[in-house]
Length: 78
Image (tube, rainbow, N blue to C red):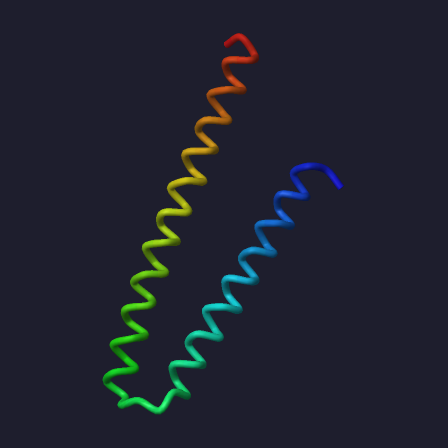
């Protein structure tokens, strides 16, 4: 396996864990003995939190990609 394949495998593994955690959290909330509106508000709050974390992660990945591209450009002497 190449280094790129290893990184892709790690990303897929982490995405799988994240998806599993999300589904587990939603299932836990849906089966909790709370009023429906309380559960809806809690789910909405958690989804907003996850969205923020996802956007932050994407921004970090874009910054890493840009940094790597600039380093590659500098090392090639362009």
